[in-house]
Image (tube, rainbow, N blue to C red; front, side):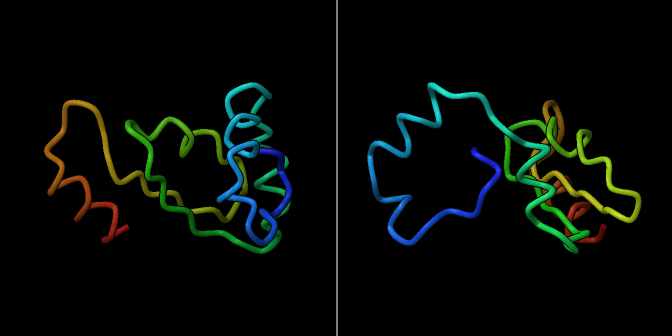
Length: 80
């Protein structure tokens, strides 16, 4: 994650995914690039990134949580 929007065809380029593994994740820069966005749904395995969103009006909803029922967690996220 570079903190910049993904360009056309970039996700289909194998080199893009190699960089994702080798380079640091720029999560704060990515959030800053989403100027005005205040609603986030996390698709990761445990909702770790949701806790890192520090925007005052932001609402985050992780779809999966460790040791919790998947259906209940997804429905709770959608309700949020």
